[in-house]
Amino acid sequence: MMAGKRHLLAPGPTPVPEAARLAMARELIHHRGPEFKAVFEEVQKGLQWIFETDAEVLSLTCSGTGAFEAAMINFTRRDSTIVAIGGGKFGERWAEVGSAYGMKVVEVAVPWGESLSLEVLAEVLTATPEASMVTVSASETSTGAWHPVEALGRVVREHSEALFAVDGITAVGVQPIPMDAWKIDVLVSGSQKAFGVPPGLAFVAASERAWERYADSDHPRYYFDLGRERDAQKRQQTAFTPAISVVLALKEALKLMEEEGHEALFARHQRNALAARAGVEALGLRLFAENPANSVTAALVPDSVSAKAVVRQMRDAYGVTIAGGQGDFADRLIRIGHIGFFDGFDMLVAMSALERALADQGLDVDFGHGVAAAQRVLSA
Ligand SMILES: *Cc1c(COP(=O)(O)O)cnc(C)c1O
Image 1 (cartoon, rainbow, N blue to C red):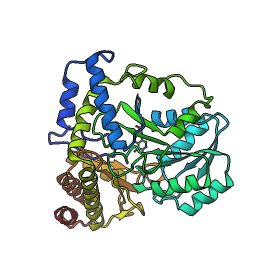
Image 2 (image 1 turned 45 degrees about the vertical axis):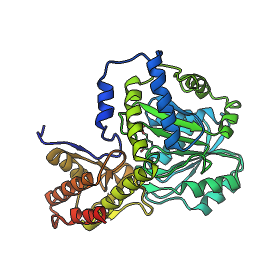
Image 3 (image 1 turned 135 degrees about the vertical axis):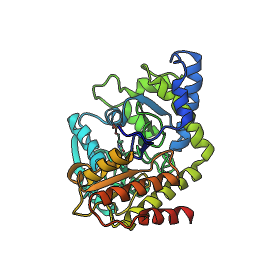
Image 4 (image 1 turned 120 degrees about the vertical axis):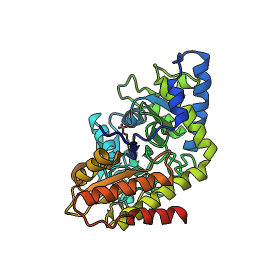
């Protein structure tokens, strides 16, 4: 084990700010007492603020995928048809959840790294009038691509009665995804991404339109019955024992986000993303996403280099944790996360460790080139 400082730049989990860490170190409180209610009320308000919605944002104790599953089995029926927009591991996960529950799933294949075109979605929806839900991952963390959620939502409403369900897990708190203004029916997120707290909570918010479908939904469910959860959370309670420590941490993290404000929060993420993109490109790597999200920078390494080896070297030799690719791109892509509580200097750390790791793989690296490119963006 190396002795130096360690840096977590994975696209989740993300670094936890000190105020949130300290909140978890305090004596545990009971989730049926008044103190928890007061904390949870603040958390609920903070979540509505960052989701930009008047709908309740329900907190579930599970990872993000649990919120996908809850969204799907509470707002559709067993005989429903799901139109699942692919394009990466998380977009495709919606299709897997739908299939697991025996629903008919129409997968809209999108090559990894690309974003779906509006024309293609319109065609699919016209051919699938029975669709009850259209799903997409706004920020597709496996490829670094951003899907044009606002425009896709408009196409859904124009061509279909289907609900529009969006995985905002690495979008909420990173770049604007105003749930009400964009008429998103179901929006999900998770604690270990932009919220900068440990894994343990997932969030799901639903429009009134979605809640109308809830009444008609006939899926078997128990833990993930969102109606029961909503009744409890109206009283600042959860149906079952929540991840209390994560709730305590979340209150602190949301406070930091609110102090920073929407605009500054999104601008900081964008600046870090632009710096990371400029840095990797200056080092001769190619950005993978044609329309990159501000959450994660995914870049193809040169053919002579193993992405896995770069990621391993950055972690083991330099203490910098980033992520490799997923699926077919496991050994071709590196992914640098800048979701949550990062500043520009974190990007410089990532670039300098990347330069060293690429040089260790035998590339002829002009040291400082990636750092300088990032630095120029940050100081502009
Ligand atoms: C992290 C992530 C998820 C959720 O993964 P879990 O491991 O279940 O928390 C879902 N979608 C996207 C886009 C993600 O980045």
